[in-house]
Length: 277
Image (cartoon, rainbow, N blue to C red; front, side):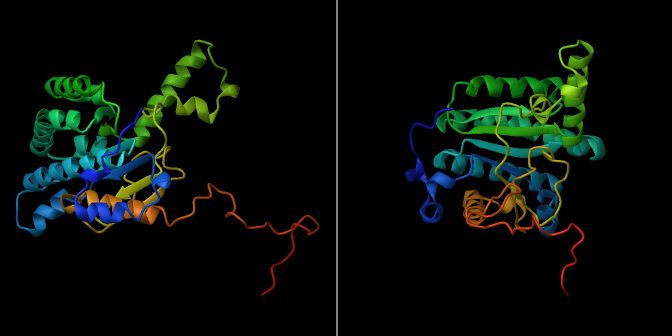
């Protein structure tokens, strides 16, 4: 993808102030967000849950716009989980699907204005036909954009993603295109929904919950995690920039040692040496 022009100057002053503190060459390539707290946001205001979801859609619009302005290559939002589809009341699920259709209808022009391309991951074939048609329409209408790739995880579950990947691998083995003993991590990776995407550098979770909720379990093996107590309907682009600023203060070691650290010379020590108390 090409991010050939900068739109940082379009950031509002408060967001621009944070952006100017960032190291531009260390901005994450991929930010993933677990959008949580719509219901609690509404409950705290004695409002119906659907109003929380509506306000959450506004947060999506704001965050996507900031992402496009700073040239973030990949933004993935956990919009609707497999568990949501199975366990939420059907009235709420139907409303969420109507809200998705409305969001796509109302924001495709904005996506094109911001050079954003939309795509989806999950078992989207299980969604209702009219929802899928609107999704396909939006993807087709934005497919030539070269800026931020917005990925909505819809009817998504990381465990089901792995099941689907293993089924695809099993098919290759049955067709003798691959031997079981030759299967590698890369073979699993290429059958994930996200095979064409880099793994997230930064995972943000709103609402203060300290769990992953079955989201991108394989892909976030080495992601930095940022949890905020802010509920999703109150989350804006400036809050994503704050998370990126926090991300840049961390040292990513991927299981290795920090730069400049030296390993102890233990070659001459027996494996059962006791540590002094």
